[in-house]
Length: 395
Image (cartoon, rainbow, N blue to C red; front, side):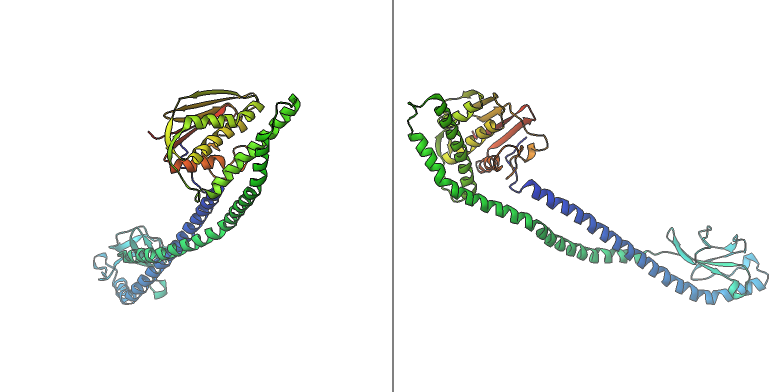
């Protein structure tokens, strides 16, 4: 899996944003669909009401002709035709007597209705003193009202969608503000912590390096080694925090750098921590691997990969360090990374195992530097088996 393009936005922040976006989007679609349905039904009812009025007005002219036809013996060949609408006459048993309507299956329970692009008006003739007859008016639906409805829906629906999107944007900012404030607070805490760590850590390391341990017994020497390990651990964390906070202000000097010598120096720096956990270290280092690189940034990559390989390894574990002209690979057989966390370990403040200390910024710094130098990082990890991280160098 490639991690070079890891996002700087935390997983929790993205997850919260996308969950809100999904929920808000679904609710907006439901609201727009409901409003669209109600508007469609309203325009449909408006259209039928218009046709009902026109048909009823026409029936006032047509029904007297039907009455005269019935009084004259209702000869089927002389049934009056209406010029405006197709008509039909049904008997009391609701069977067709005569007519020229296209649809013969009439719903007598409704006064007016739209069915298969045809509008029907059902008029009982009993109120007109013509017995149990039903007069049917039929006309095709020209569908103009549908086109107008769509035009209005697109116009007003688009405007409403834009309004809902603006509201959603404002709500998302309000929703994410507490999280942004928490991240800012954590950044401030890191800045303050870094400032307070500098002086005591420097003093401890300086005095440790000046101590003469030749006259110490084994027990005292072990205690001193433990102090040295703890101090170097704090120093590494301090270097990470300093880089994370000040990386935009640090001067960059990309000069030919002997990565072989630098890696050897950093392995010696971590030697006490490796020995403390009784880790079996295997190295395969090509001599004089030289690349244009900033020394501080190359150090941060090596230190963080080595530190994680030691930190997340088990007692008596194994670490393999490979450096050649293609790049650097560091592999351990430690606790590994859960499959659902592999995609997130390069994100800021993300820790695969919270039982182990740290701020979760080491691999984030590695990803930042890799992006800056257009390097490719691959990570292979299985829980309880181990992790292998490779940084591929440019040719």
